[in-house]
Length: 478
Image: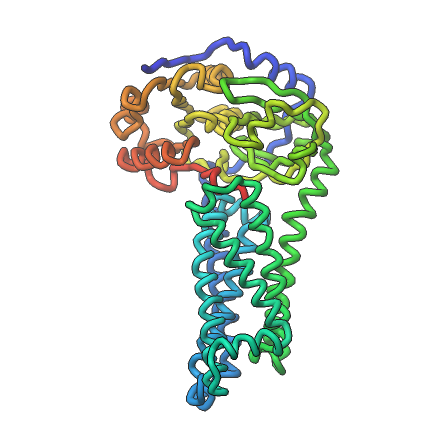
């Protein structure tokens, strides 16, 4: 089933148009040629990767002054060296993972929050393995030096060496957070429970520092090494404090966002319109998301990522949310006047990622939310083909608004409604709908499986990987 629309009068757009009439649109950033910002972001990402690798090499090299051929030849000498190297590399990578999710604006713009979170998770097993290897090898090395059993030596280290007991507790918290992050375990937990457990990672990191500085051979009598290590720790702590807590608090106090209205868009889907002050100064782009904290009982302590479903004005923001759990379901009952704390904007699913002046936008389900805002934000000269996928017409949230925006620019809108077997989006189906697909940028948003199948189909149809844009919102909630 395929319906093509070329402009339409809509019922849902009237309220939004009235809202926009109340205030001018936000001030836009200086437009860059298509692809320029994307190339700049790739360059920044490569520079950050190189700096990260250099930092790892320098950190591990701190053990060189305390590692000699004679020390390696002694009882437990090799194990001691391995223990020190794994400690330095594991701890350095742990600090890197905290920086990855510190939401530093320049880093987030260059890489994208979903990719940062994926890398954060990918490094987790390596960190646990390295720090675990440090514990095992150091205990074995010290036991070999005094000809004692490993369990006895572990007890001696924990009870007599400064800060070691704290480090043991910190390692236990790290393991707990790691176990909670495994997919089969996380599926059994509410998001709120998992999030609370994950917060202990910060405490675990803090507990590890004292024993390193007080008992670590690379730092005892080596002021430059100590200065390097403390700089890494306090820079990481500063970034987390400033960007995870300080900046969101400052923005929330400045913009004073409150809920204005809640409207149903489709079964289980609602739009929450909010008002605030100087919202254009957020410089949010269509396709981006923010973390929202609704300051009411049972909701104030948790922040969730939701995409903007319209480009902000000076005094209005809007999100469109599907009931997928406790938090998203409760938004249908949120009361006007509720205060909202905000964090963001984040995301690279924006016009800045575009390489060409022709795009195809594909959305399924509530994935239409960032696609609708992105469409509104695209320059007027960009040629647009939009594809909506849903089980029924009632499931096409914001369909009327999308049709209006597509029609205004003379684009095409295809609606694929019904079972997947009747409305395929494989390579053949895509090229049938969009014959020049290989010459376009493709933006896709929807459930994870849907996005992956569309991306694979687009690649088979000849779309270069750098012109396929998506953000996995399952990776945003950290």
